[in-house]
Image 1: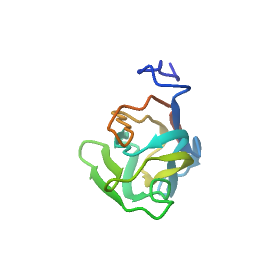
Image 2: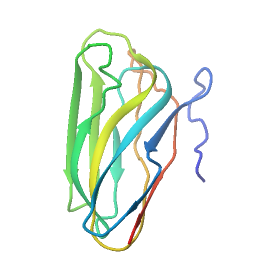
Image 3: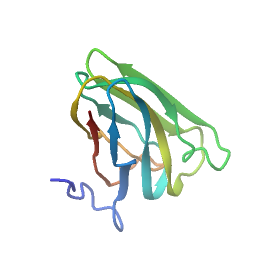
Length: 150
């Protein structure tokens, strides 16, 4: 269940989207940060996604842009919406203008969460709609993060 099948007949392996760190041990009341990272991206131009979270266990405090898409000095568009009442973070992230995509590995987004009560929360990315500069879909495989709160 951890690895989604390749959704498109893209050349080569899909790019991997992971959390860093993939496991966090937190205490109630503690805030912590994790990153959504991409590995082995090929010509990535836009990388929107949804990040649902268990709002009984976690509060989303902050979402910030990582440095991967703009690392070559090109402008990016970063949109974020924390829907606390629904337990969902929505991220829009893309390069701006007629520029190529980015290849390689790096941080897409930084997320700051607060542990509210004891339990185990699993973070899984949804609605990953990664595209190249021609807006063709890029195959993506994602893996979850585990937040253990005591």
